[in-house]
Image (tube, rainbow, N blue to C red; front, side, top):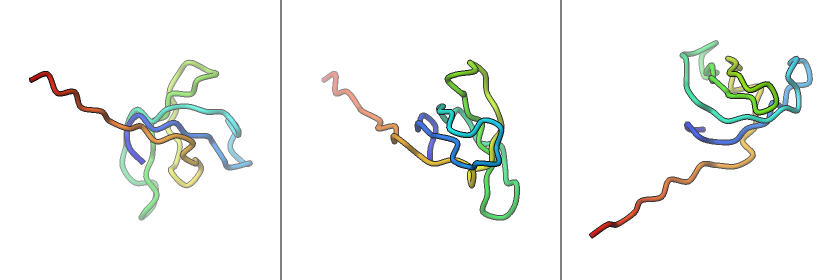
Length: 69
């Protein structure tokens, strides 16, 4: 997962279950191997800290480079 990826909250116990958003940052580990993600949730128009284990990537952000030469 990287910044810009589109994700869906896939954990049924999470209050934002089934909402989609974009990763806008990382904020350290919740537990070993489980990182806190800062996700901008589309439906709420605000960001939330959500553990990586509770989300699934729906669309990877592909970086494009432009050659201006």
